[in-house]
Every structure is written in structure tokens, then in C-alpha cells.
Image 1 (tube, rainbow, N blue to C red):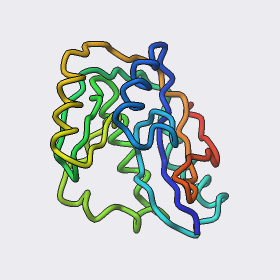
Image 2 (image 1 turned 180 degrees about the horizontal axis):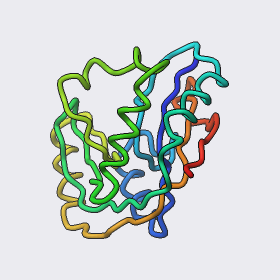
Image 3 (image 1 turned 135 degrees about the horizontal axis):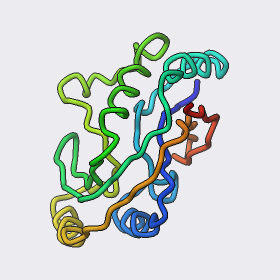
Length: 174
């Protein structure tokens, strides 16, 4: 059984700022590159060729698209997080998310997401307690940088026993 996740790994010219924030506040910063999750981590025995076929079929109608991220906001949904918000490209990401969770991935839709709307974002901080969360919020509240790029591919990662990300394959967008 493999633990997988389906993501966008944006390539920003100014990604160093995101990496600095994540190194301070995201425990997964040393395990996975900055990313936008489309399909949340799931354990399955789905064969790689079957998953590739599903993704090609689902993503064949999607073209490359621009995304713009800015403004870091705190959220208490499912814990204490800092989200870098997506200002442009949201609708494409939501459509991909919805389509990916059909067919062979339909049974892997997270139960916790049934009570919330999917909010595309990039997590830049995750906190165990309110005190450290407040420190993180204060540290990033004045960051006004924008992060812009074109999404050309969608990646499937395998999450190993150490929580490290191993890219299994990528699907190019037309």
C-alpha cells in the first residue's frame, strides 16, 4: 500500500521567501517542496498505470494556467495553520480537485472535507499551540509579496515512512 498525494509544485522566481517562512513554521518544510494540494494524502493499492490513466483522462481538458498567490492568513480549520492565499487560478484548481476525486479516487475523498468547502491554498505554517501560532501570525502579517507563475503540470507524490516526498510521476497540462 502506498501513501500518495496529488499536488501542484509552483515554481516562483521569489520562492525563497516562502521557503524561509516554511522553514520557521511548517514542520513539513524539509520533507516536501512548497505545494498546493489537489488530492489530500491517501493510502491505496492503486497501480501506477491505473492512476496515470485516470489523471490523463481527468486533466486532458485543462490547459496551463497562471496562478497568483498573496496574503498570508491564519486559519483554525482542522488545526492552526498559516495559508498563503490563491488570488488567481482558484477556479481551475477547484475544478481539478473535483474531477480528480471521481472514478478510482472517488472513495478517497476525505470525510473531514465534507463539512468544509475546499479552499485552495499553500500551507506555510502549522502550529501545535496557540502561543507559537500567535508568534507566527505576527511575524507574517506585514508580508505583501506576490507569487506568480504558470502551472504546467500536476504531480503525484509518494509519501514515505519519514514523511519525505518522492515524485512518482507528473502529468503535463496541454
